[in-house]
Amino acid sequence: MNIIAVSNRKGGAGKTTTAVNLAAEFSASGNRTLLIDMDSQGHCSVGLGIKEIQKGKTIHSLFRDNTISLNNLIIPTSFENLDLIPADPLFNHGKGNLSPYLLKEAIQRDSVLKHYNIILIDTPPSLDTLLVNALVTADKVLIPFVPHQLSYEGIKQLIRSLYPIMLKENPNLRILGFLPTMASDRMKFHIKIKGKVGEKFGDAKLLPPIHNSVKLAEAFAAGKPIRNYAPKSRGSKDYRITANKILEIISN
Ligand SMILES: Nc1ncnc2c1ncn2[C@@H]1O[C@H](COP(=O)(O)OP(=O)(O)OP(=O)(O)O)[C@@H](O)[C@H]1O
Ligand SMILES: [Mg+2]
Image (tube, rainbow, N blue to C red; front, side):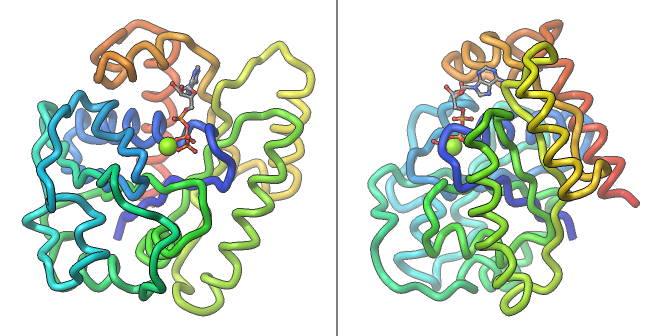
């Protein structure tokens, strides 16, 4: 099973940029990939250039009516091997007391895994049932973080939310890795925070960094993964290296 939740309780950590660009890399290397956007900010659609979302055909529809089939929510993208279940920008994250198993059960019931090698789930920064659903469904969690002083707090908060889930609802969940984003090789505190994460969780869990690159923000605004928008840029090279590293880890 390769269901990867991209998560960090800190907002603006590079979760969506990472989910979109890794999905693009995985699919380009021949892996049938499904990206699920659990965050009602709906940014995955933006990053993939999808402008119109049909009402009632979003992942949030499942949280309103759990009999709905995921297969009816999947939309193709203009990138080969890459499909998306978009988010509903009108979904109210705070609402309701929903089962943490809704997404997991729907994926099993609708045999979604049969069609894909990798499912990536982009998650909201808030701790709500949607984030819990993502973490209960995934077997791996990827944690992007900006290596600045405060980032360690977001990681600690996420780990605090992970442990009870690993003990109760999802004992199969593992940390795939920590991914430094918007990183600088020159700034001393970036190097220091990366070192601290490596010390705490093991150097093997520290993935090759994604450097700060304005092209990544531009690509997002243009609705294209970086590998299509600026294939020769540093951001493109970084995501390719990270994607290959992740493919190597998950194939072992
Ligand atoms: N490596 C990078 N270099 C420069 N800018 C980046 C990089 N990664 C992401 N950004 C920009 O930083 C901002 C936040 O990134 P992103 O939306 O991916 O974070 P997020 O964790 O998904 O945020 P949220 O918690 O709101 O969902 C965006 O404007 C994005 O374009
Ligand atoms: Mg996001």
